[in-house]
Each structure stands twice: as structure tokens, then as C-alpha cells.
Image (cartoon, rainbow, N blue to C red):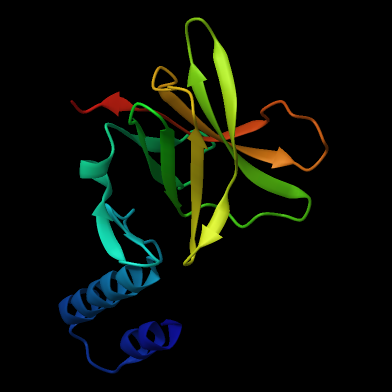
Amino acid sequence: MRVFYDIILKSNKNNMKLKIFILFLLTLIFAAGCTTSEPVSEEVVIKGEGQKVVNLSDEYDFSGELEDVSDGLSSGIAYAKYDGQTYELYVEFRDLPELEEGFFYEGWIVRKKPTSVLSTGGLIMKEGKYINIFMNDKDLSDHDFYVLTLEPDDGDPAPDKHILEGTLVNKK
């Protein structure tokens, strides 16, 4: 990219407006090419016998956007439901920073009153994306706040640095 800037700026043509326009276009093209994030998927493929595509927003009763609270650029979306027997949580993330050695990401669901904080476990990498899948035989629908933390692998079970947070809203 720098080569193109140098060629345009050092050219013998004196048309400054054209040079500015071309630099502007190259900057836009370069910026568009630098985006590496894909939008969080509304669909997920359930693999196995009878493979199918499930639309997450239709499949789950609760959903919520997750916002970065660590001054980063990460984001995500959480989905949850309780079908009378099983509570299911599916969370997908984008643009999470690479983990340093000795650290891991952990999900949490929170009920504010009375206070209850439950770990949803560590994130897993699936098809190039971090996801958090959690199931429980209790109805945890009242745990309507999701937190993603960055944890040192030090054996301390308490939540550490908050990375993403968001409220799951009942869509029905």
C-alpha cells in the first residue's frame, strides 16, 4: 500500500485534486480490506445425522448483544432458552484478542436479585470462532446478564477481568 502512496505523491503530474482523490480511494480500499471480522452468525449448522441449519434468533427465547467493556473492539451475541427440561446457552464472539500463555476466556451468567453468578465454562474454538455452549437441567432464565472474563490459569474460581457484557432479553 505504501508503494502506491509513494508513486502517486512523487508523480510528475500536477493535478493535486486527482492525487487526493486517488489517495482517498486507495485508503478506502485498504481500510475495507483490513477488516477481518465477520458478523456474528444468526445461523448455526448442527452437524451429524440429518444435518440442518438452525436460525438462532428463532430457536432461542432470549438474546442479547455483548459489548466490549475493556476498551477493545470485541463483541458477541448470546442466546438462551429453557424448554421445560433443559436450559441452553449459546454464545458466539468476534474479534477477541489472542490469548497470552497462562490465560483463558470464561463465560458467566448472572442473576442480579437475589445475586447468583454461575460459570458457563471456558470458551472453545469452533470453525475459527470462539463460542460458549452451556446446558443445565435447571431453569436459569432469570440469569439474564452475561459476562465474558479473561482469566489467569491460577486456580482461583472467582471472575477476573471483564471483557464483554450484555443483557439477555426475552423475545416473546
